[in-house]
Length: 140
Image (tube, rainbow, N blue to C red; front, side):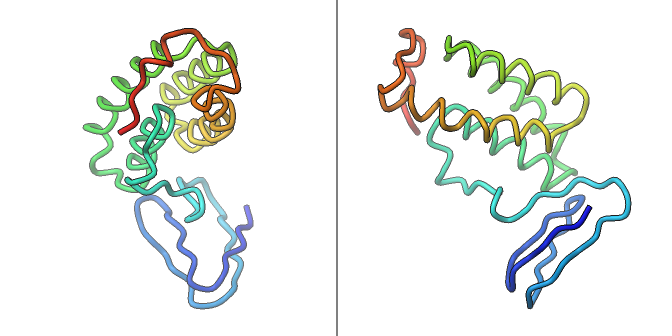
């Protein structure tokens, strides 16, 4: 897999942080867990249920040593988030996230959550109807 990086951009691989000083391309020759900097969510951005779940899964990738403790929190957040939404796209996506987490495919789980952000944003803004469960959410 080839990954193109801009000058100063970071890449998280198996818990290590790599920053490049110039535009470069990296080829990953074997299986590893990686996260691109532009996919890293900052703590202040965890303002919705999906973003909170994403942040915990992201921390499991970025700090494998703390993954066992974070997994418990992730399972708790996943269950809570599943109770929050009734939208079929989000419910289905969270089912996928649950399966992917169970298989240890956290990168794919993050990708699935990112794809649900627009639906969640529509629900939170009121432009997409949602049953009362989501209306009870209070942003952190």
